[in-house]
Each structure stands twice: as structure tokens, then as C-alpha cells.
Length: 394
Image (cartoon, rainbow, N blue to C red; front, side):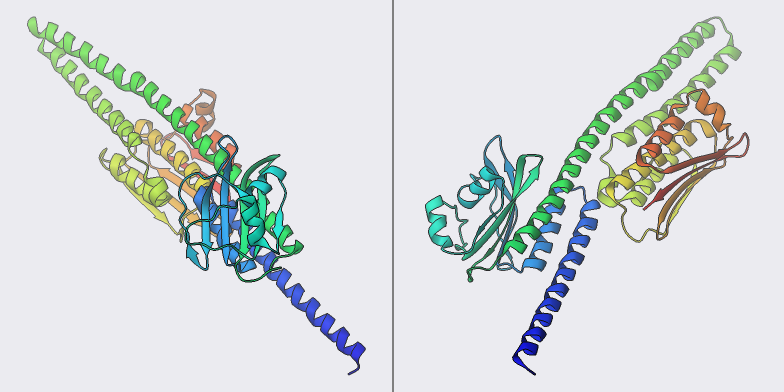
């Protein structure tokens, strides 16, 4: 083999190696994108990205930090050195290289004389760690605002990182910034939903239970007056009315008390939350119930929340209006779809008439499904029960 052929062969081998490396990096990045799309808890986002950065860069140190412009401080949410977790709690001045990244809103790559430069810039050192030989950091941006810094370090080698690594780390930062903003908006929406739910509970407490207690008081006064003049038949009827109204009020109170409990949904997932609801409310109301599911793992939080709220409203309607003896829930998943159905054997109704007359429960379920882009269908007719079906494309 001539020298020229040998050079061509080495060039092809190097290109093939680089191509395989880039394919592996792309596969990891794709996995990160998919993983971030399913995560709405902030620390889980940091942990996922930090672990994947370690896979691609194989650095000695990875640090992912938030930045608070109001206080000019950073908080290290993910810090690994030589495979060991570093704990640096609290909000700290950025200093040194991180201050440079924040001020310029651009990546910073230092591959030579890092210790000398770090000392000159006042680079803070976490106790128990050492100054690296190579340091690369990029900003995490939302618009023009720096919201965090991603950095990787090599403790033993100079020139450990290059411009290709800079672009790759920037890709991680961009994906992570979007995921964290989504998580922030989700949390904001969740707090608004909690506030709206509290206001709704207050209205229901006033509109249903308070009115029922007022009715009981009127029946009791009427019964006392009729007792004094010996009208026992009317007294007996008023006592029956009091009993019926009290039972209805008890059912309403059970619903309200259940809704005020800490949610099982967040801790244990959709199926467990619905099982808990059926046992706590429907079981005590004498309504027979069953639930079946083939879910092998938990669904994304937004999907669990939406499906739970629809099922919750459907069960409330069944309990209050359907006069059902049985209710069944099924949640079935295949490769592309999740389908939830709630079926009761109650008196049924005309769905179109209910919507025209402004049935708030039905409207609420439809609006929630529409918000998520899900298919929502109600099958019901007088004396034929009700089936509510929600179909979610994954």
C-alpha cells in the first residue's frame, strides 16, 4: 500500500469513526428530547440532561446551575465530579468563568492555563474539588435572559473540548431551557387550577350543602308546628323529607371532603387515584364499582391530570343524577392510543339536550378534552345508562 493510499485509508477510518460518534450523539440527543417532553418536574429535567451530558462528553465534572438575575446568584442543581455527587446547597455568587458566561451571554471555552485564569477571575471552588485543566460552559437562555449555566470540565487534560463540543452543549442548553419553561408554565397553570378548584368548592358548599341545611331547618319548624296541633301524618312526611335531605347533604359533604384531601394522583398515578376515589366516595354511597387497566407504567403528568379530572366529573354526575347501581371504568393503552371509558347503568339522558341546557359537568368535560386535543364522546339515552369515552393520541 502506497503512502497516498495509506493516508486515504486513515482518512476514511477517521471519517467513519466521526460519523459513528455523531450518530451516537444524535441518538442520545433524540432520547433527551423525548425524555424532556415527558417531564414537568424541574429536578427531573436537570437529572436527565446531566446524565446524558456525562454519556456524550465523558467529562470529569458536570455542573448544571440555575441563575437568578434579581439576586445575581446561582444554584447548583446537578453537580458530579469523578462520578460522585457534589452537594453545594444554597444560592451562591457565580464568580469567575460563570460570571463571564452570564455577562456575555455566550459560551466560554478555556483549554489552557485554566488554573491561572481561574485565579485571576476569582473562580469559586467548591470544597473538596480541584481546578480543572479544561473548562467549557454555555448559557441557558430564555429570550435574551440567562436563566442557567451548563458546564463540563476535564481535570487532567488541556484541550479536552473543541468547538464541536460547544455546539453540542448549546443544543443541550436550548432543549433544557424549553423544557424548564414548559415546567414553569405547567406549575403556574396547576396553581391557577387549584385556586379555581377551591373557589368551585366554596360555591358548591354554599349552593348545595348550605341550602340543604336551610331546607332541613324549614322542615323541622313545620313539623314542630304541626306536632303541636296533632297533625301526625304531616309530621311524618316532614320527618321523611328531613331524612332524605340529610342523606343528600351527607353525599355532597363526602364529595367535598374527598376533594379537599391531598391528591393521590401525584404520588401514585391515575389508576390508584381513581381506585381511591371509588373506594372513598362511590363505595360509601352504595354504588358498586370496578376498574380495569392494562397500563404498564405511569402516563405523562398532563395526561394523568386531564383524564383524572374528566373521570372525576363523570363520577360526580353519576352519583348526583344517574340513580345508577353500577359504574365501571376502563383505561386501556396500545402503541398509539390511550382510551378511557366510564360506564354506568343509570337512568341516562339526552346528551344534546343536556348541552343546550348548560349542564356544567358535561361542558367542563368537553372543554377539558378539547383543551388537550383529545376526542370526547358521550353515548346515553333515557333508561339506557351513560358511556363517556375519551381517546388520547400518544
